[in-house]
Length: 438
Image 1 (cartoon, rainbow, N blue to C red):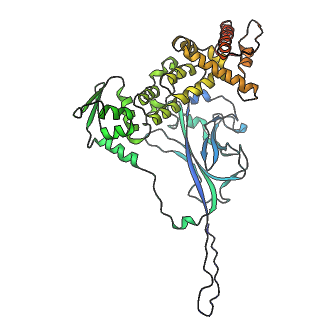
Image 2: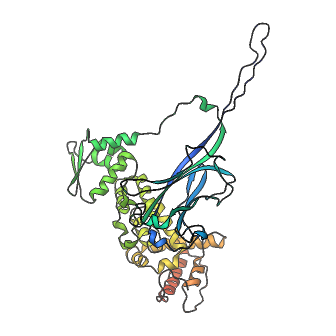
Image 3: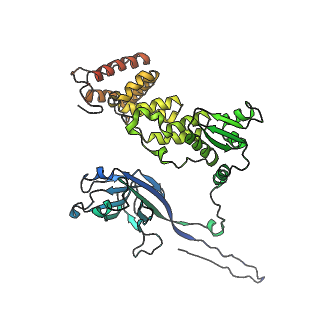
């Protein structure tokens, strides 16, 4: 949409121009973004009830938060669970947000005939859709017949994949765009990635459990101080072979991928939840890559691995992940684990992971109690953290003993006494399952 304005002045007797033309441009366009939503365990989600949904994580497009809602039993009671429903919802505050949408159900067969509902690249009679307020939704009550969906290649290994693209409509007056040159995103990672793949000019070879990887000393040294020390301060110049004995080949491959491309390797195992193997958190791909990042001094890779592991924190897993974070100095992950444990202390203390923590990482107990004390102070100051004493009185006192919060001048004495009382309360509660409230 364009709007132009111009003005001209009179010429004087000397034919001089008294005024000059002006112009402006109004630009209306969409700011686009996409989100992939994977629904695992579809058969377990069935029966949740008509009108009840499973929500994706929120994602940001055009300055607003959005979420995908999937209704396994349908949104409309009149359909009697004959259809599944899919909607996109405005998940943040907003008034009259105008947007275009595209919902795609991914065909997981080699034919890849995706089911696409799109409003991009076509004229809509009433223009883009308007979402009036937070919680407003757009989508399809009858997105797919459930019987047909369950017999189709859209459902594979009890898993559905949905992609949603949102285009938020924005308008602006922008004169600078009249004369601009588009600069593409940096592709240095792609170029260095090709250097790694082609092995051209490689001058060092790593032997990792029988597999060989060719790389470039200068690239590795530029990215990692550990490699810099190894190659230029600790090795002979003609030493071109390095044996790595403490790492699996797939982990070392992912390490090199990050060093050259500055991105995580695309490997499903990296993002796979291991909640069924909680006592083996340290054996997950993400944990092993975190250890490699710590060894070679790659803080950005460490944060990426921390982010992956953070998504698997639960009552049962938090103690194991906390121990892992402490071992590899993953400070942000450790802080989140401590806070989560403090806010869910009674349930965490009843988990198998907490026994592992007490046996293998006793020093973390005091750190956890300091976090608990911090939560208590926040609670007393009308913070959001739930008081541990409230947790304890709710679920950890089967003998009807009175537990009163006390004040200690010495923080260590307070922590020790708190630990004894809480441990005693939990040990008298063995007949309840972990996390169950009284």
